[in-house]
Image (cartoon, rainbow, N blue to C red):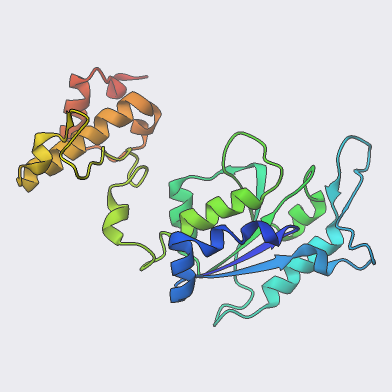
Length: 251
């Protein structure tokens, strides 16, 4: 899978791309990340990529010409048999909320183009003509879209087959609408606190049941809103009711 990232500050990506799982995914060829400096598509000697907003107001706005030229040049770059076929996604505070479900959807593409907004935003005409989708990683404002693009890259890349063990994804938080169960490792007792006995019992069926119930408990306690969309069995619902859940009875 290929990620094309359009940014005014490509240097911000040097750390995240050279560490841990993303680094190994790049080295193995399972993902490709190409950074594009929007300033290279400016036409003046000062490499101006922003200007004051029409109508007045604070801050600056990313200019249409260099950003549009950069997007079009990137889309024209070949990537196997899918040259030019890629959704162009703007990272913006007023975009659709980025969730695990959206990450899974994006992981089905062979190529993504991520545009990092800056300043007060980008010229609206570019959004109208060249942006296919807008995403926000949360209800807050960052200084730019670079950090958001890193989040999207990381969340999507780890879903690409072979990047991490498929079993690690199956029951993690948000994979099916529930939060993940508690995790433990050696030693069996730490500062007087012991690992739950079921986890060292060797009884795989009981371990699976305990973990499922822990996921239900944790989701109810921390993110009850997720239960509305979670894939719950009749047994799950019965157990949740013993914990005081009345989701099925809600209007």
